[in-house]
Structures are given as structure tokens and as C-alpha cells.
Image (cartoon, rainbow, N blue to C red):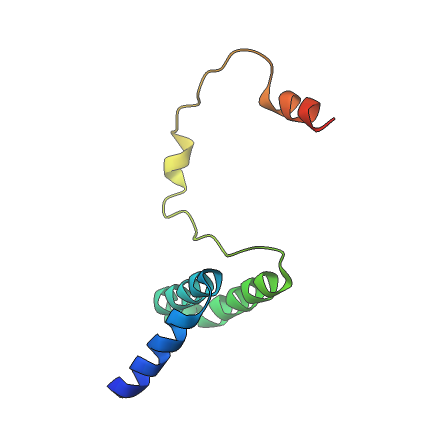
Length: 93
């Protein structure tokens, strides 16, 4: 691809609304990060994500947690008073 074509694409990307730019960025990240051995599965996930974004179900796909094991050793915050879920239910009434 020549520099002129890249520049035209760049100009078109800059003209997109911010939400579309974020969606494009996510798609490009998925494209460059997808291993070739999982290309079929990655394509299915990307298609599902694209459909969900297009339908307005989600704004964008979150990246997977790099090390889920790190979450197992987290320290929970101590709180006092009634549970947050109870407060939320009361405020919605």
C-alpha cells in the first residue's frame, strides 16, 4: 500500500466521530493481536462484537484480562452500613 493511500485512509479515519474511531481502533487491535492458530475463532468473536456494536447492545468490546489469576489474590474493601445493592434498590423506588 502506498503512502498516498495510507494518507487517504488516515484522513477518512480522522473525519469519523470519536465512537467510530474507538470501534475502528478496537478492530485494528484485534486484527494485529489475533494469533494465526485461532484466526477462525477470533473472526467469529469479532463478527459477534461487530453485530452487538451495530445493534447498539454494547458500545465496544472490552479486552480480556491479561492475568485472571491476579484477581484471585485481591483484597476486598471493608465497608460498614447496609449493602450497596440494598441502597441501589431503595434509590430506584
